[in-house]
Structure formats: C-alpha cells, structure tokens
Length: 108
Image 1 (cartoon, one colour):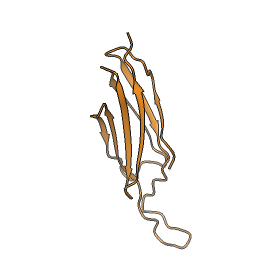
Image 2 (cartoon, rainbow, N blue to C red):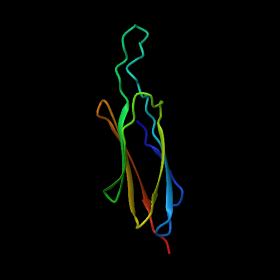
Image 3 (tube, rainbow, N blue to C red):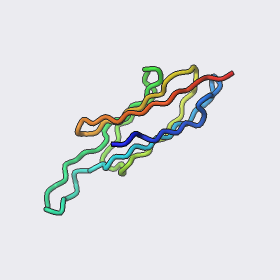
Image 4 (cartoon, rainbow, N blue to C red):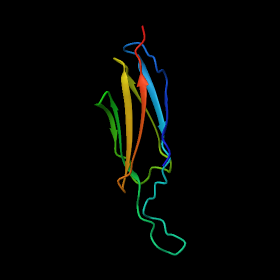
C-alpha cells in the first residue's frame, strides 16, 4: 500500500486559527458483494476505522461503512492551539494499518 496523500491548509497557522485537512488513501474497498471471474465471492475488505490524533490526543474518529468508494477521501477541520504532530491511521478488515503524519508549527 502506498502512503496517504495529506494536505493541510496552513502548516504554520496562528494560535486559534482553523486548519483544514484533506487526506486520500489508496484502498480497493472490496464490499464482499462482488464475484470473481471464477464466480467466487471476493471477501469484504474495507477500511472500517479512521483515526486522527494531534500530539497523541484524539482529534477525530470515523467508522466508514460498505458504501464508501474505493480510495476514500476525507476532509475535516480543527482549531490549531499549539504546535505538534497530526497523525492519521486507516485500518481495514484484514488488519492492515495505513498511517500518515504531518507537522504543524504555530506562528506569531
């Protein structure tokens, strides 16, 4: 699996400024409802949990369902109060975990 693509609106926000985060992860998102060429059910394997933390503290959690498309994209905002590491993780049904991180530095 490739690393997620992460974009933040401002890597050096002022304290109290709203920061927009956009992230895209490559994942097939097999629903378990599709048949292979041989007529066998392709096992379900979707991302069932997304977590975002800032300096280790929970920021945002999401539990996507089967209807989410391949290569899920997520966008959320939060208020930057101090500098630190924004970490995100996506966990799929097979136990694979995709992680991404970016740094924020409070300016002025």
